[in-house]
Amino acid sequence: MHTVKKLLLATPRGFCAGVTRAVKAVLDTLQIFGAPVYVKHEIVHNKHVVEDLESKGIITIESLGEAPEGAVVVFSAHGSIPEHYREAQKRHIRLIDATCPLVTKVHLEVGRFLKEGYKIVYIGHRGHIEGLGVLGEATSESIPLVETTEDVSKLEIGNPEKLVYLTQTTLSIDDTAVVIKALKKKYPQIIAPPLSDICFATTNRQEAVKALAKASDLVLVLGSKNSSNSTRLMETARMEGTEAYLIDDVTEIDSLWLEQKETVGVSAGASAPEKLVQGVVEYFKSQGVIAKDFIVGSESIQFAEPLELMQLKREQK
Image 1 (cartoon, rainbow, N blue to C red):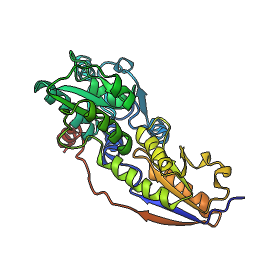
Image 2: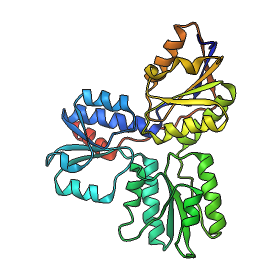
Image 3: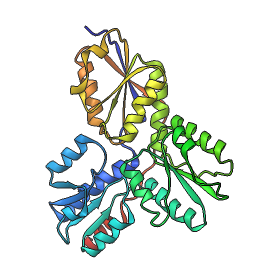
Image 4: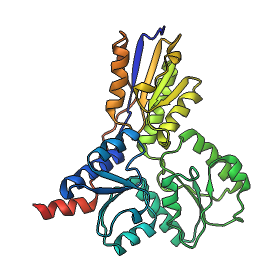
């Protein structure tokens, strides 16, 4: 029998501006062209979002070769390597680029720093789609990827005079700070990007979860297992010493977690829709638990839609 009395709902939580833009871009593309619309890689890393779009006529692919010549293809929010843009052009694909503008910023930084003669070190998770896209910007130049302080200690890049670090946008603020400290110790000349590469939404959600974890006996984070920023939220809560779990939806709540817990905190990764949070709220409300907002900050940033969609809509008028 659980002892939960209070449910705290973290704000900000859930969809960030980049995810909102990407999902809307897919829906708008579908409205303009009709099904099928192909999406290269999951548009965002959330099982429910992807399944919902696929039920509407979206086909998720991992390589452009899976789409017929001349097809309509949306590039996911995580960014793509330059080769994919060239391939799309060559195969007469109607391309809608839904890359998050904050990811595009890092892509552009790679080009600019290489042009200025810098050696780049990239902090990110090995094999993550966002990092693969960024590293693909350096065609002839190898950019080392570091994930931990151990990776930093193994770095062998000589002692370049011009050195800069760039990062994946969805990293843990605290973990990244430790890696940056190790880089600065080993390479005192290393510089930071002009503005932090870790996105504002990632930062805001982690700050909210830190405060939430301090006020809760258990933290539940809505998000899919392959979502980097959602996983970081669960880890952030655990770093505060609070029990925390990453769940795709309400069906994954284990009643054993709730034993001897009075206050449960709830947040959601930047790719998790609000309806999943409300599913958890309903579950607890049905058992007499009171839900309260736990407001740590607010967000008002919105991104303009992809240029290709703007042009298409203008042509339709």
